[in-house]
Image (tube, rainbow, N blue to C red):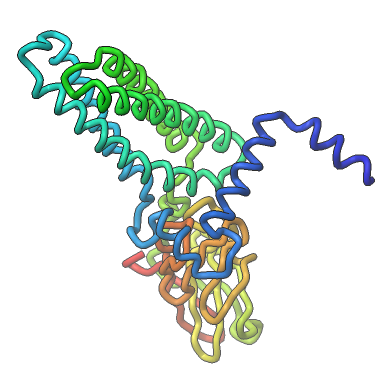
Length: 297
């Protein structure tokens, strides 16, 4: 058994080993393995924003570098009369680089919780974005050394960098629309119109999670004294089973990636999840625990 582990590691593809090492390093930096509330990770995930932060920030460098290309084309057509275009390209490159730092930090944080096909696509996405960043960084240095209105080489590097970032954007679309990364896994859950009996009250112990079905949807129920709470049993982030998670008070932690939700209102407290879990109204009738998806969920 002691000799099997090294052989297994050698058999693992190089990119998989690289991904493992990178993900572990990122998790150390952002505090994935720390105790809740893991504020830095949640901030970079966008939990406070109610939306993944990475796709919001990525619009800025893409727009800035598109403007850079436009300004460079204008300057290349008439370099002696369009110094303003060279200056505009210089400023746009700087804006894109600064915004890209935020996109890198948020993107790597999100990627650190992926696996399988989405992890491989995400690694390629990150690679082409990194190429774009390096090309624009060199382009900025050349513009700074030669002056905003004098830099054919800097403009060419910018065009290549734009091609890289646009292809990286295409791969970002693959992550969302093909592999489902970052998609709310509870978005299409059915909602019954009436209360549905799911458990006999006498069988429900306090401070224990129960997985039940309501309108064909898995729901997790918690009893604390005479109070009952219920939310969807599916973690919105990646579909993890919340009923298998650890509870602390009325908060449950997803066993897959550590997202934390308050069971009485579904509010997400800790990332990587960014949207609340659907809440269920609970009542006791005729000795049965009955649930119905809340209209506000």
